[in-house]
Length: 370
Image (cartoon, rainbow, N blue to C red; front, top):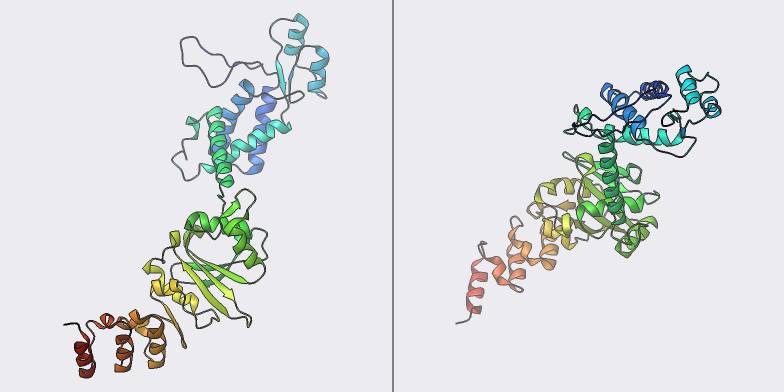
């Protein structure tokens, strides 16, 4: 018989005072399961202290998980095939006091509670509680577990998702990170799109029905990816943290038209990722299209592939670029008078600081207002 008593005048214990007839068997079962799981010494010690005391003092579940032993027949049923302990038989014969309890050592409710606490204890590895678990009693641990899981559920209801490794495949590994491609055939595609959006704070995985991941912008992207009309890529650092999202439309000939290159909150990616993005873009069989996002990043597509404007030296490529984006004239190397005249016809102010031919300078001077 075991009883945990509250001493008058002292701080109230987290564990109530109850008599449990099979307390020794409960402790043995806890130790056996903990060894079989390979729990750390700290977790084993916590279970044999706090979890055991919680079972004795606080655990409640419908019979037969917890049974109040009021008769000799009930005692025989609980302890079968073992004999009823002599002290319990004598107490039942006298019929005095509150009936002791019998708790199933391997009952479903008990095992579920134990695994919940093991999950909580394991999650403290690497936190400030590691090495200090004995300071946390079972009711506190269960309250923390419930609060954390309520937050997880609220996050899921709001579209929050965890990374699904099976939803992506590595496409290209750079110096500081890796580009992964979303797998169109993955059952976790929508969840991974939501994961991307929650970190990047853009609309790729924003679903109208966030719990069921349906409707809205996310529906459009998921459907286009799943049907092969769109390929989606993510540049990720450690712990699969997204930094850049790239979408590419699949043309009828199979080539890719790079459509969007987004940093966080739909802004251009930060400059330190530019070389990594260039390395990735070089792996794609892409069209000659340069999207506005690429231009905002300072990247262009020419016949030879993706380049920084400062790397574009062929006059034909330079002409093509300035026809679409005359402001690039300042970034191009060794520009010719032909390019200068072309830009001057559209916006001569873009030529400020460049070495212009005497003829063009005279023409610009004549064209200035008096």
